[in-house]
Image (cartoon, rainbow, N blue to C red; front, top):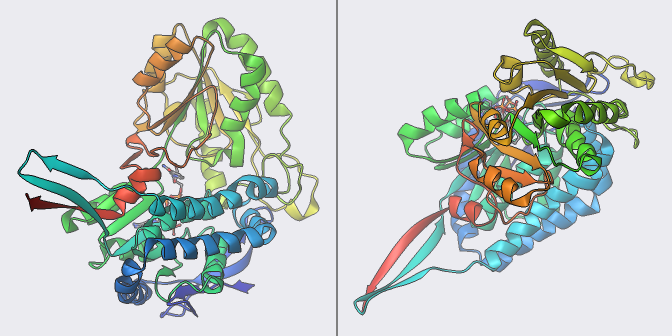
Length: 481
Ligand code: NDP
């Protein structure tokens, strides 16, 4: 068993209470590591360290802070293989996905915000001939960054990088389900000689560590990515304390296929948008809304493509779909497939446990990519977040109805629209209730753009200037002429 530790003041630390929590490898269904079962005492130590580091770090010139972030990115890139294999082992994702996309993106997050703070422009307003105003944007203190298990290091660094770049110090909690690469990041900080206490990482349960960060009076800024109900619990604690909160929450994203879509090109991408990372990406398109005139052709092509996906050992380089992150999550996915049948759905592809050839995976947690038709777009299966390799397909008679169906959930995170009539695509994009709309593409992310959700998918935006603003306090200085 590998023993992971908290990272406080650049030192490894066990939980004050001494307890440990098992960490599982989903592909084999067995524990391989343990993390400290931390509580509010560990969070207090981390916050004290971050508070002590804040005056020095916030006054460090931006170029110097950027140098540390770039050094951290260098460290991740130097150990790309080790990071990718660890992420794949911990989360169940195919190692190829971690190597080509997620770990490079983690380094890119650090580099992006290192660059952004050095190229930030200020604001200046002249009030006739009476005064000039300028805006100071100052770091807010200790930021609490809490992230989920689906894209562990990618989402962890997406929060930490802008917080540190703008001069805040950080207490961060990765998901207890996937803590490994966050632990490795502590080593990277030490190698990069990040000043003591600037970034502190506390492992453990959301109900103890996460809750203690959110309720700590000396953590005025909370950046959270995770489920909608957890987001609501955090908001209810943070609001009366007047904390600044960013909530990136769940989704149930629509993929709209118009009658003039180029199916040859679109279908492989729509399959990827549905099943990448076992469908465990908040941006996955899990409800496909298709113009009825092409429903039969689309469904045939889509199902054929899905059948060609290889479910297998995440270690294998030819695996498309790896393991489901936990037994509990696998059971949730299975329960939704059962519900779909009760709701009148027909499973046209997948639906159960795949046959795997790798002997080491015989007790692992896997689920076939699953396609369900015949359901009402308003039923539970089609509107609740499953967060796994399960999609539903729904026919519509016109493009107005497609937008209506896309908007008929409580979520509003992302949507992709596929077609050729570009004017119509723009009109539809404007009417979709989602923070991100892709036209003829999916998950193409420019880190300068605002990222976040509407309705119950969240509050606030991350990315680019939005993140720089979130982690700073704006102060107007007005100088009489
Ligand atoms: P959870 O909400 O269960 O957990 C997210 C993080 O919050 C974890 O670190 C968790 O710890 C912690 N946590 C749990 N309870 C509390 C609490 N009371 N106070 C503070 N922290 C707490 O989400 P999942 O990890 O299950 O992630 C999946 C969800 O994340 C999906 O709904 C998905 O859509 C969403 N998501 C949203 C994204 C977006 O950008 N909008 C991106 C990626 C995912 P622990 O692990 O110990 O429970």
